[in-house]
Image 1: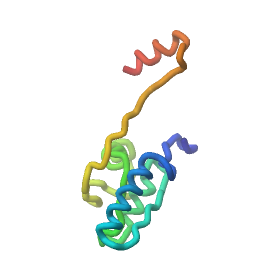
Image 2: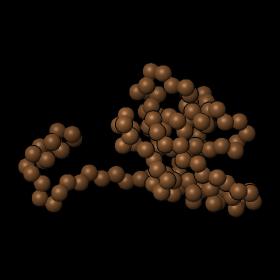
Image 3: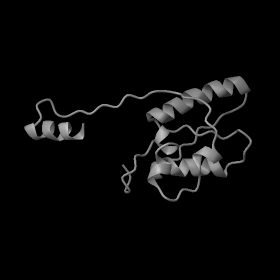
Image 4: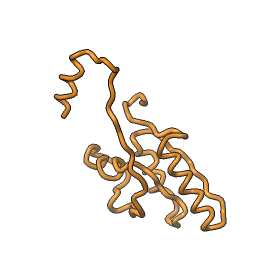
Length: 118
């Protein structure tokens, strides 16, 4: 977590691994180098803003969790991009499972807290 509490997607994380696998396929299809550049921070807004500023020639792609294009516009009053107007969705790439875990014998309070979350 960064200072602002946003989750960063570092090199070697699941999004990075997926991007590199896709980049390999694109490289093979196009016969030219493909660079994966991680732009973590601000809950994905930094990467989305970079895509908006990129030349509209199809050579810059954004691989991001759906939160950047779906939820972020609902949460922040001011964005420097509009996902519906500035970006075109290409494909659903992957599903990532997320789990909640506690210690093997958690204190009774954990159960009460988890039930309140649901």
